[in-house]
Image (cartoon, rainbow, N blue to C red; front, side, top):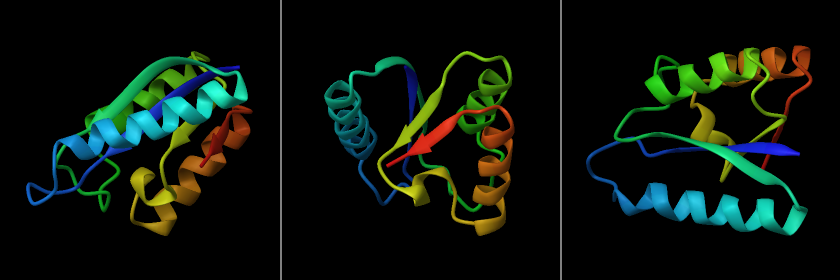
Length: 102
């Protein structure tokens, strides 16, 4: 299974290391599941209230291109803060038969 990791922190008040911590948690989980991490997408100091984050947008484009089978994130709120945006992502991924976990 080809997995990607999405990590984000939202403000300058949070630590840059937060991204690395999220990635490490997801890497360990992928390894336990036997999945291969093929890409990491990270948005630094960008609010999850907007879906117009460069790495998030690139991840969606790569999903449409069939580059992976599963998105890993430390928590659902890393993908977005607006329920409508997260639901839209879920719908897009479901249509593409791409899973989202953690």
